[in-house]
Length: 402
Image (spheres, rainbow, N blue to C red):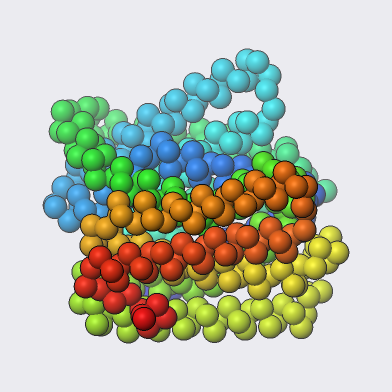
């Protein structure tokens, strides 16, 4: 009972930090700087996925096969190599006097890779109280660095807080070195063998995960590439605000984790449908409150962009992301990842092409752009549901049952 209460407390504080932190930063920092930070966070996530090559997805499978200690050793050594490479790149760029934002990106990449590897490792061992902090490590440390800088500076937040991230990155590297050296065995052939096995399992998961990232989480990168950081700042603020529904989903996911991977279909559908209903009702309530009290929800600089009218569109996209995440687990457990990858690539690539066309036509209306993101995500969810129902015996949910 005490452990459950401590988990709920830890989860609430961690998620409140994730939710309130970016909104606080969006209010205290210049919107251009905020857009730059969000762009780098999204970019770091993509680079971390490429570096991981899907290996984090195979960590729970290997732990189930009773290779706990070996998996921990492989993860720690991999992260140590990553941070040493980033340290080398850091000093190389420092010599050439490049911008501080590049140093910030290196730290984000390191911590984003770390959260991808450590989160499934910790969750598979049942350390739920620590998981909410680890799975958002990069964002937590970004807000923490900005908060320290704000307390020292007392005049707002500027790019000077990037340097605080450097010191945190070096401290994390020292911890990794200590943990690896404590085992007294730096390398053995079993590490390489296990990593190759995890790599074979992880590549299909990686490709499918990248496709889902493009469908649901690439909006900031696309906006930053084809438009400007002001548009990124608006979308990011609304996306973070919509994260209230994600918090509820993540709380439910902790209790559904084992069910999603192994429970009978009939019982699982009841739990998943209940979760969908709870998240949907919570999202509707959030949109109603935002429309009634826009002055309390949105900063003044976003009022001119009709943020209260755009918010339901982004909230709906986040709800589709939740549905897609549940469907993706069920697709993977039925070995349908390759089929899903081929079919889902069609709506994702089409939606991306539409975004490019809008930019070439110099269309900067946020409603049109955000609706394009939404309809692309909607097509992906229906495609995933079609794959699962047509290629397996599973009924996905009453919401997608024909």
